Image (cartoon, rainbow, N blue to C red):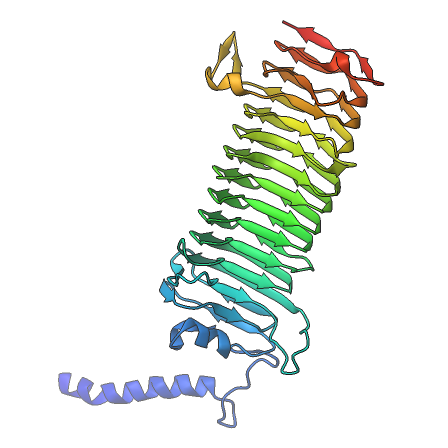
Amino acid sequence: MRKLFGYLLPGMILLVVFVGLFGYLSPTGSAQTALPGSKPVIDASSYSSLQAAIDAVPAEGGVLRIPPGQFEIQKPLVVTQDDILIRGSGSSTHIVNVSEDNQAALIIRPKKPESGEESEPQWRIQLADFRITGNEKSGHGILAVRVNELFLTGVSISYHGGDGLRLDNCYEDPRVSDCLITYNKQTGLNLIGCHDIVVAANQFEENQDALRCTDGYNLCMTGNNLDDHLGRGVVVENTYGSVISGNMIEECQGTAILLDRDCYGVTLGANVIAHNGGGIDLRDAHGCAVSANTFTINRAFGLKVGSSSGRIAIAGNSFSNSYIGKGEVWRDSDDLQAGGMILESTSQLAISANIFSSVRPKALELAGATSKEVIFSDNLLVDVTSDHSRLKDSIVADILEVE
């Protein structure tokens, strides 16, 4: 019986191989035609380097998959194709920039024409599900220049000597969501000349500044967590028509949110701004709304409106220390640093329905020349002093003051 099985086994194996091959072949015996229009997925593990794998993606685009592993690079990876998706295997795909000559780890930019003329922008690049790190002497983590419809999701960007993620004139629809941007020596996410921007559900930790948006418009920044930054939280300059809402901004050594250099039409709403060097600083802003924010123990001030700002609506905010009821506070020593609102020679403000409780030195402090043309009404002042009675050419009404 064993001898018979030994004779039959080779034939059985051949039969299985033949059936499998027959299933793959068409009736004419040739390989089945691939799906019309499809392109092969590039597997980086089949190439000698990550750059070689990137270069293998067709010029018209495709998908590059990077397996788990730690991949050290000495010079920037460069992506010039349109319509490319680079996807890793989560944080187990770890690209490490070991160079110490201020070079970026990953550069995304249009291919330069041989004519030397300026190239057309690059389009539709997606990065997903990998980790990229540098060192104090390396440059930016990811540098994208003139890339439209750039989309990052699930990317961790950490420990770079420059910015974590720098988008330079990525004009159309950049999106950054569900990313972790941490411990970079400069700005976590630096947006320069961008338009219709979405920054959502990211975590920023201990960069210099968390986010800067300069010379752009239509920033939608929602649902992010910013913690422990060595500089400021969010810096917005020369940008209009934007919303910063629903963010947690905590323990920045500098100001949580700064609007400067001709900002207008910006809404700052429903943010928790806690334990920062300062809260919101409207240094040069007009036509903006500040509403429903919680300002808790911000050392220099909760909200400051500078002399170059005006036409601001300020409503429904809470300025507080750590009072938890029954005459008790949670952070006794820190509470002495809980700042209120400062007006610096400004005008044309509507300040209503806010509560100022146990903030120092004053609920409303007037600095410089007295501010004017202010409506200060329907506010609740608890355990504070205030300068609201010194406002000029203003309406001060219905103030409830409680010892």
